[in-house]
Length: 391
Image 1 (cartoon, rainbow, N blue to C red):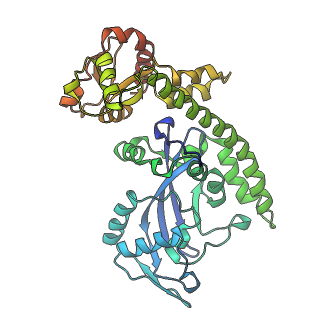
Image 2 (image 1 turned 60 degrees about the vertical axis):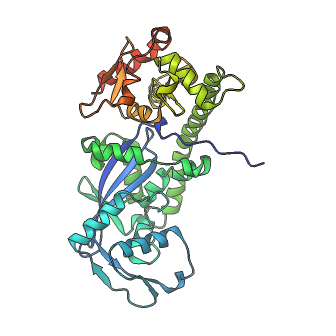
């Protein structure tokens, strides 16, 4: 029997979003793009989106690709359709079409909500031109970015840092979604990091970028790519082991909570029992099951572990501590994770964001019962300290 894959928990990561200006062209700039790159605490890339500031597109795709049903070809066809153009397969000259501002705005709006995770950075060239991407040996490539007034080709670097293959392999694909993270950054654009600032604060990544430019000459790029991939691989493996341990502790967290469950009790009945225990919510006040919410988020526990000198695994054991738990409805859980509110040391719900509207549902979770408060107070206090230090 095939082992069921774990569910991906986007809440386990403390993501940053890096904004980078990119362009292509030889004698003059043909395409201008903005990349938004979603990275985790270790600077591995999970997802990205692009916006076009200037675009020349070729609607003819190489004829030999006619029977190809690749993701990159599907994406190319979708974009051409959004632009109101006609796609075709053929040989010979491929004419470029400059997209006007109105159609570019329409395309960019579409791309904000479209999924690009499975399109490699190099294959954006294919999406635009309908031809396979050119090689990046000797530090060359179609797309470039500037850093300290120098031009850099970055495809190989991003290929090394890409983490999506590992995520896709480990987790149930239907559970992998970054929508809530993108929504957060689109609503909090001031938290987006410029590419230059990202590199200035990550000297190893900066070194890789320079290495690919200056050490890739004379056919040495394959050796260099393998060297840097191996260097990153060790860091990836260590991080991957941490993620696997977190998954294990998450499962233990669920088991520890379910230990209170009666044998004949279904999830709805068990949820009502927990709602009553923690918030005094009566059976007829809520008609859906509960989420097992961490008071101190998993990503914060992970961050504290990564920042600790000793890397003591006991820090991670907070993940399965049942005192780090509240039974919350899905809506309340999402709002809590989005930092709209917290519960203070008296168990009282306190608003963080002024735009948060206190609905009838939230009223039911306004106060943690005294008999449970003493158990969870330690984690309430630690989360309050984080909130006060970051708002």
